[in-house]
Amino acid sequence: MNNINENIIYTKETTSLKEQVVMNYLNKVQNPFIILSVQDVSKDLHIGINQAYELFKQNDFPTITIGKRKVVTLAAYLLWKMNKKGGV
Image (cartoon, rainbow, N blue to C red; front, side, top):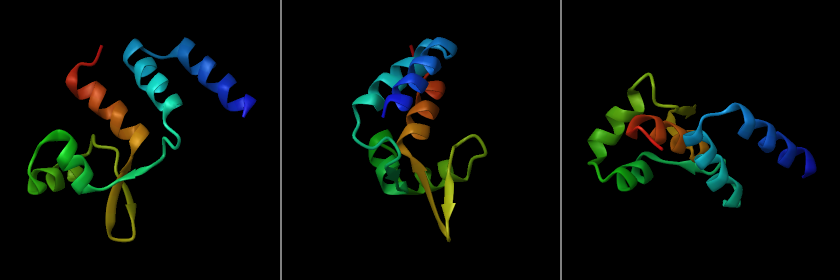
C-alpha cells in the first residue's frame, strides 16, 4: 500500500492540475478500475444510448474491448472527460 501512495505523490508532481484533481478523486474511490458500460456513460453524460455507442467507437475515447463488449475504466473515463470539458 505504501508504494501506491508514493506513486501517486510522484504522479502529482509530474501531471497537470486537472489530472491531479482526478487523481485526488480516485484516491477516495474504493476501486478506480471499476468498469463502466455504454449505459453508464450514457447516463453520466446525459446522452442517448446510440450517441454513447458512437462515443465508444471514437479513437480518442479510452475503451477496452473484452470479447465483443466495449467498456472503459472509471479512471480513464474521468481523465478523458476532464480533457474534453477543458477541466480545471
